[in-house]
Image (cartoon, rainbow, N blue to C red; front, side, top):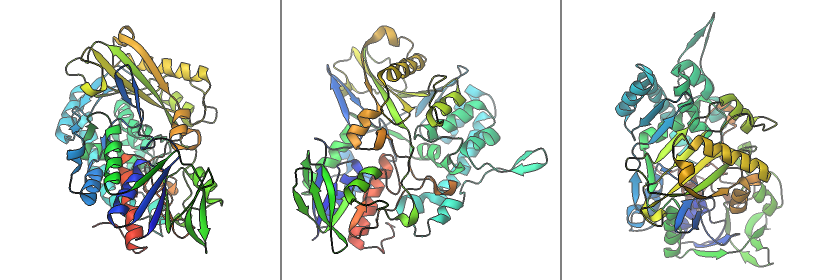
Length: 500
């Protein structure tokens, strides 16, 4: 039995802790804040309740596997999962709307043909077939195995089977997601639908590799799910599973150093001077935090894969409304920006100058537990925003722009509004410790490895990394997968190659 110190109580760290405890190790989690969950938080006021992190759960099989492997109670005994249908309503810049059914290719094709014109659905359906091929080629090495030592194979090889595109005397194939949209989908609304999946993860579709096609495919193939009571309930369930497996949590305990002995990780030192010895250390923290506590740069292994830098953050607006949620309302509506280039330059350009409105996701859960009574509604707006600490004036302008976009999804929004609460990148930074509140993206193949993440092993023997800033990257499913990979590397050793 090894003594294992875990830094941070995010979902990936807790997933690793639960698995390691079941394997017979003594696990202690040290969390800087006063609660668990990392970015998966909850805000409550006047009987209203909101998720301030992720609002929906893709690929719930990851957490089903966690609960099967760590106890007799399955995930559905601990939380109530609800499949969201329609998966999303999309409002495009020209006013066209479409509702896409959940996990139904035929239904999606029919809906797009009806809304966008004959042939649009077929083009999207054909794209999904190609996206599935990219998924099949990358699923295991990117998600289910430790990062390959020869990871450059993943970096250089584009798994998406682009369609040849003839232009003048040249034949080209799409190498970026934006080119896939322009050359293969051939409709600005379909392109906006495609690009919104990358944008939701903070990726610039103009530079994101074509392999980012797996993001809409993942949602299409495995559906979109809501956790009754909010995604915070999933974090609660994982935390309680850890406690049931005798994982110890120490909150308000900031780790200031990873201790070393004989060239190996040997424990952690806390801000109050307390020293906790350990045989192994698992760090679920942002790259800059790890570099600081490990007291050396380039501590991560990964065969040379650097941590992702320069990623944007999120702006979240929580809305308390009078009057109940209308019958038949879509859980999720994506209102697409009328100024694509302006939005992308604001988010990814050097000056972050906002010239147009953002793409806004509007979440309207049908959940009595999130409101004081049936005569009220809780709505969450989210949009990508540059990482950093924005000035109050910038926050106010962006909030107003988000509300203006949300008016297209909730026409009577202003008249029903009781109050609003804004969560900025600074709030994400406080909750997670990431620089400027940056949010990690999932790992993707190709693109020269720019969207890979460092391996879960590091340059210090006995020190492992877990969570969104490590292989296989950001997002709730990926965080859960990282927990499984770290547990496998510790329990089975460096020869571990993932579960079969």
